[in-house]
Image (cartoon, rainbow over all chains, first blue to last red):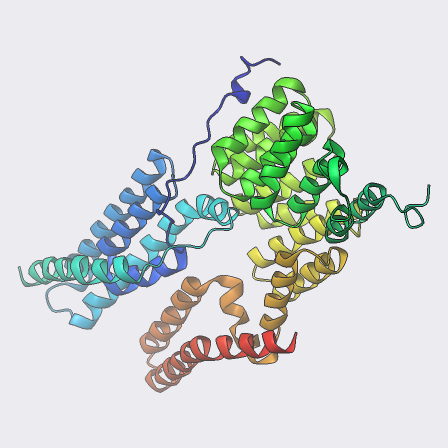
Length: 149
Length: 290
């Protein structure tokens, strides 16, 4: 073993100051209230704060895209134009929460590693509210157009 | 020499340190004056005691002063890396580990310390490789087992963490660090009773450690009978419990049991309000009682 040992090369860098991640459980409420887009945006930003590798961050976006596609498919093909708005909302919520569970699973090991640092999670109130209102409104308008069209 | 009978503060401090009383070790060191107070032995014991008490901010300059006097040593660099890790200065902690490993490339404690630094930085794969290397030297070393528990916890492999923490406790049933790891494993699983029991043992074994006492207090509060209805939420997580509740409501409605679905919905809303209101009140009450 020597300094040329690949395992003994420096690979660690300090976490960026002032960029603490959000609690994974709080992100679930954003997904439930704001939909797939809001949950995915928050999950993706949080993955960056946690320094999750790029492949996993892409997987988080992929989970969001699949959930979006599933939502549209359920609304158009399973519920159809005669479906109630309650059914449409419920379908969107269920897809968002399922996507969140996968996205939270993908971030899990990095969040638990973060907890070893004895640092508090950042508050999700502000960013979460913005995501719920902003992304939720856009998503609702798009889904409403799809149902109407 | 019987350390209890000697008047040498350094010997007494060392004695307190070996029986897991770093707080008493610091008291003895405070009796030292002049050059003795800043000797490398005194600084090393003080640095170790402060590190054990999680007073990392105070520990770092003390250990650095010891390094300045004594020169690089694997043990001091291990202490420094642990303290820097506790402060979140992970790149510096890694530097200390690498400096130590340059002196003693197969030092099991240093390899474990470096694995913990990598784990805290989210580099679980590298931490596992380092711990495999340490285990190749000594598979039954307590640091190796303890770090494996921490890795299993981070990976979310609770069964493995539980198995390893039991094995670790089997080697020394009084080790506060092993009890703390067991507490963390139980907490990850949402096992409130298990976490309280483990942290209580850890705090009793090392009464000067404020973090252990705080953790024991927190889980003691969670065991209050008024919080027991919320244990499934702790066990499965808020989001999974929500999902199960929604599925039950939906299932009951789909089965044509609308009144039952309504009753369950009301129960669920009441439980949610209960989970927001009651725990802070119980925790505040329990904090006063402790």
